[in-house]
Every structure is written in C-alpha cells, then in structure tokens.
Image (tube, rainbow, N blue to C red; front, side, top):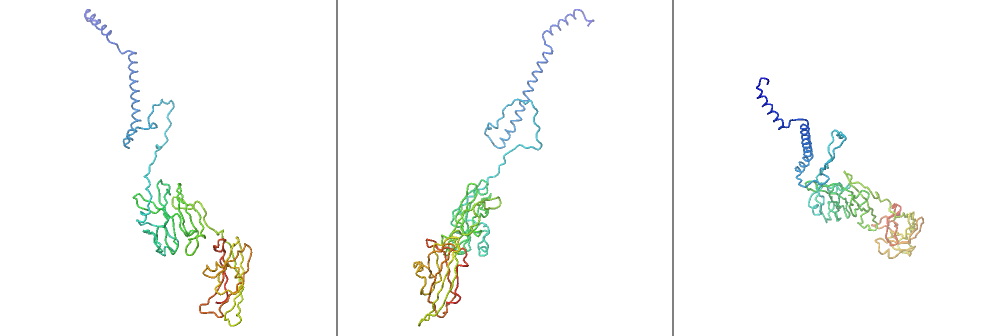
Length: 402
C-alpha cells in the first residue's frame, strides 16, 4: 500500500470506515444471542420427539383394535416435571402386564326336548344293570316307558347352574333305568362343546351308593349340587312311611363330582326296635269222633330295645281258634290281614309277654301240608307295621308239617 498514490489510499480508508459503521460484526453479544436461539429450538425439537414417542404406540394400538373411542382419563398422557433422580434400572426379561381374554364358554342350558333328540354317553350303572341292558354308549333316552332295562329320563325337572366355574350354565338331569317296579337312577351333568354339541360332563351321584332313590336335585349359586336321597323305594308293597330321606351336597373338583357336605350313610333306623320270639307247643288228639288234633302254642315275645313297641302283632294262625288268648286280639286287624294274625298290646323295651293260642289242626298231614311257623312284628300307635332291627329272631317254626 505504500506504493499507492496518497490520494487513492485516502479514498480506500474512507470507504472502509463507512462500511464498518453500516454492518454489525460477529462479536460476543451476537454469538450469545445465536446460542440461546439454537438451544430453544433444540428443546422444542426434543419435546416434540418425546410426545411423538409416547402418543404413537397409543394411536397405533387403537388403530389395530379399531378403537375409535377417546382414551379414558386413566390412559391420558399428562405432562410431568422432569425428575432429578436417576430412572430405575429395568428388570431383565420383564414384560408389561396385560389382561388375557379367553373365549367365552359355551352355553350349556339344554331343554328336555333337546336332550331327548340326541344320543348321549351315560356314566356307568350299578353292577348288574349293564348286563341287564341298561346301556351307556350313544344312548337315545326314552321317557314315560314301562319297559325294563331301558335308559330313560326320570320325571324330575332339569336344574341349571355354573357347575364347573367357567362362567356358563350347565344342565343337570336325573336319568333312570327300570329293573322291575323300581328303577336305578343317577344325576348326570350335561354341557355343550364349542361346536354346540351336547356332551356329558359326569355323574354327580347314583343309587346303589348307600341309598336306593333320588327324590330331588337343586343347584346353589356357588355351583354345588344338593341331592335329596332316600334309603328305600316305596314299591312292591313297601309302605311310603318307611322311607327315610337325607340331603347330601356334591361339587365339581375339576375332574369329578365329590360329596362335600351332608351325611354319608343312613345307619340304623332310629324308629325300629328288636323283638324276639320263642315258642313251646303241645299237639294232642281231640276226644270223641273229631279226627282233628289240638295244637297249643305258647309264644313269648321279648322286646330287646331300644324302643318301646306300642303294639305287636303275631302271625301264622291258619286254623280254627279253640281257646287261649284270642280275646286279647284286635278283631278288626285279623279281618284285614291276608294271614290270620293277632294285634296285641305292646311290649316295653326290656320286657317280655307270654301268649297262649289253641288251634284245631288236621289229624293227618294232607297233600298240601308244609312246615308252619309264627312271626312277630312291631306296630306303632297308628297300627303301622315296622321292620325289626334283627329279623332272624323274629320267627319260629313247628317241627312238623300241617
């Protein structure tokens, strides 16, 4: 520049000074201003990215589910203040908890008509019933039949309830198989499979397991099954008043039904007592032209307890009365019985009574002669006859045929 013309140098210097006064150079203040601006832009970008990372999965999941509803408040994202502590270390192999949904169990409510219209498998019958013809495989159940050894629906109403705790209802029915005047019975649970077919869940209980009849069935809200059972079937001449009933409860354990409450056996009937009969006899000819003989029997009745017998009856009198204690007998009772019998005043527990009866019997045994005997029975105050606790000592036989 020292070689330049002095006038030209002056003009260049003036031009430079003029330009410097027009333009702000990049000094410290300008640098700090630019840095603050860049930091603000970076923070906004980071916050926007965080929101996208949080909202994107929610929107994606809603799209996959086809869920057009707005998130409930518990699912809404709320801004939180930044934590000053370090975030916890995630547990290895940890996965977020989720509710697993399973398909709904099929509705097992089955009508009587639907069950009769299909073939079903039945649980096994008591021993001897299958040999007689009570089938269990692919059975088409019948109703209102008097045929023997045919599986059928009993008249008991169907019951419904969630027996296996799957959230759906199952059906309980009483199935029977007649073997005479009485029938074997079992309570069977039925359901539907996923295809809607009727399937057998299992047997709740059956006769032959310590009782002979099923009287009623109920289902409780907890899925337990209440069955009213009876020790005998009042048929074949057996009076209804002899029947005893119990309520037993059963429940499904995942594999089978088992008893969970109620008595497990009937035991001895507390209404019965133990009568015992002993006899002495004498057989002599009748004086005169009568060819018959006179039979005198002395019968001793002992009540071994535990109950008093309000009345007793002695049976086996087949011939003409000829003396003794006949006047002590109730005449109405003798007329109403098939075999001539004598209804007498009862014997208290622990005591004995002796009775003498004289009859005129044939002098010589005829072609229909057979061993004759006597037996004693306990009666209550209503003239109802009851079985004996020990039947073997309730009867005695004559040592000859008449």
